[in-house]
Length: 191
Image 1 (cartoon, rainbow, N blue to C red):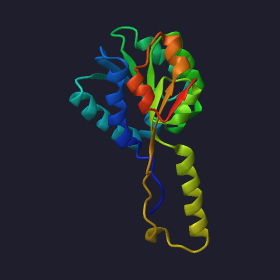
Image 2 (cartoon, rainbow, N blue to C red):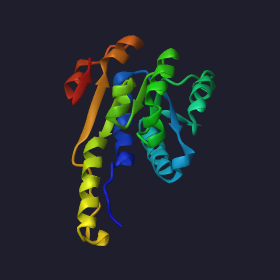
Image 3 (spheres, rainbow, N blue to C red):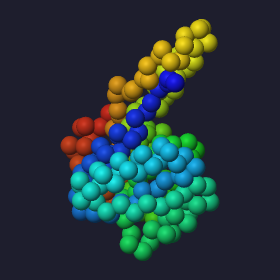
């Protein structure tokens, strides 16, 4: 077995650390998860709960597995409204990122995720591996295997760089002032 990894599970803890920097009074986070991608989502949720406990954040997990579930998930958040929402850059959330950003903005909830495409679609901020770079590396692996390399002889490749991206338009729409220290740390600020 071989391939590439986005190390999303490892990025979740760092992403959670960013939430209190954006929202100093934050104590409650809703984590949306897709049970269709259960194995990797369970790993991410485990890391989310460990990091949240360390940061004294309460996490409420909401299951979302179809586009239609997005509206009802945000409606379910009304009682005990969270300070922020956390999502991962899995296929479901990447495919529905634009709709998720629209709903979050309508509910005035900042969303944090583990991939740049999510932030480009309109969520507030992301921290994670550049999925385009990982995809290109995956193509290189396929090429090597087609040229005769044995998959078992190829190491699993880890990302070497994680990106921190802020969507300033979303911050402004939510009425949030992003601290200058975060703006300076960001790899990109979407104006």
